[in-house]
View 1 (spheres, rainbow, N blue to C red):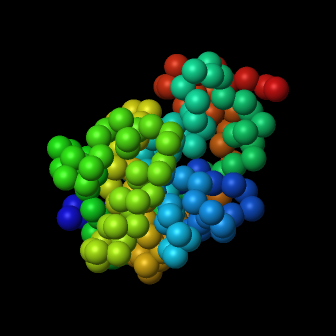
View 2: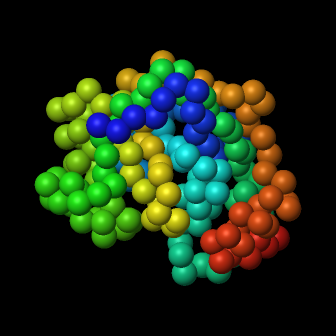
Length: 180
């Protein structure tokens, strides 16, 4: 297991109508490490705001822009880790023992990652999964809902992403921030 100590900050970009500490999805699995059977919920965050932006806003690498309307429908929040998080690492050669490759982890077909998430959730006491972003190879976390007591929103939270900040973040990924 890898650890993130109490006091550390995690970054999250989320829909304006959602609480910063939101475990989802509400129905069928949608994202990379969601429960294949809906038996638990997952919160996604990153160790850096830039990585969170890449994971949330740069969904299609072939698209050369990030739309302002997409950014304006979301906010950014920081989460504070309130107790040590224990995370199952999917960041090194050990992914092979789970029948995965980095192509699986960084692809957009999630059947294998859902299965692995379900296995990790069922067979370990991990609070979640540590993995790397497909967009900048930086650390991200997929926290299982059993870790809800280990995080809380920093103050302030649910902050709008300003035009200048969105422009800079998009440029970091080689994208242009544009008005629709």
